[in-house]
Length: 385
Ligand code: TXA
Ligand code: MG
Image 1 (tube, rainbow, N blue to C red):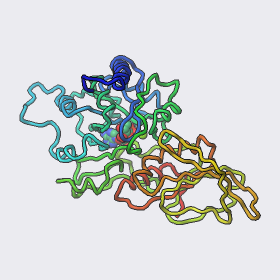
Image 2 (cartoon, rainbow, N blue to C red; image 1 turned 30 degrees about the vertical axis):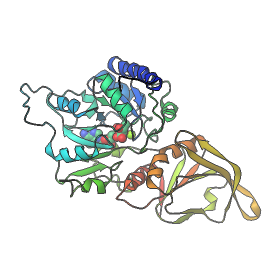
Image 3 (cartoon, rainbow, N blue to C red; image 1 turned 90 degrees about the vertical axis):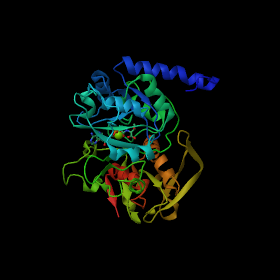
Image 4 (cartoon, protein in one colour; image 1 turned 120 degrees about the horizontal axis):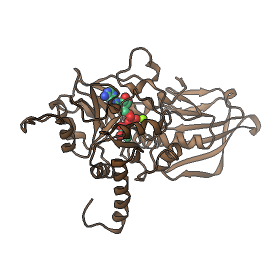
């Protein structure tokens, strides 16, 4: 932060210092914003602190965490840990990553690196793997917090395990109030889905999780033209051992049953009678409910955090008989807007008591659309198309 602080900046500095002090001294993690989703951070070099993350989230500890750095100097000193004669000529960051870092950092891209021996990271961060995932977030608040803490921060998304990732401070509190002491509130996350995870240590290089940086954008970088998709969506899970350990767990799930439409299709009326039925519109494949009409009430409910509009009404049968309560969220046609509002929509519809959520799937596997569909396939208990 600049030395000459306005009143507004000054009011931020104190809480950031407080959060940084807790990160240095406590075993209770601190939630903070990044441009993708809120993270639940702990000093990645202290075992007790990292164990606090798993405890707060209720997350299985065989799922490794991403390490967040504020600058390349911090990463280089991690990689040179334990080396007695660091040669100033050799960059400890593998050359394959240099053009990627130049293009996408700070930003929503996580790269895998070999874990130095001896390792400066708490063993709980990597869950026994010989590599670790690292990224430099675009969020200035996040980087300032890391800088003030003076340590790399291990941080998974700040949701309770299996819930949709949080994109506002309120979402974090919905899941973790009583389990953590501090959330740095940076407003709604710009991207809304997590970072892309890439492995450049194997040949060909591979995308382990689709995210904020698209496959197309990766392929435009020198040395990354042949990068392959190595993640599998829900429909494919179980066919072989997962490469990114997080892929085998239930994820992103609201309490409601989620039905994802991968092609234009109709839901049968009998499954909705007497229920609270929701539709998330994405400008993708349309969803209709067989034989029913929709009546909207005048008002709209607005979820302020990410600016979601929820229209409320009812499904009506023949002669206008009400059959089910109806909730409609339109995320718009712009895929960036869809990604931005997706997790918030799942959470908001849960809060409003939806029993079943029909979601319009989107096209375009080569854009952030791939990340959106990946998260939706994981959230869905049922896929139609
Ligand atoms: O955008 C993000 O990446 C957010 C924000 C907070 O930065 N973080 C996040 O972390 O999504 P998490 O823990 O929810 O997801 C980490 C993903 C998992 O799929 C995990 O399996 C993978 O990264 N991962 C981490 N280290 C790995 C490694 N060494 N090898 C393979 N996969 C790894
Ligand atoms: Mg997560």
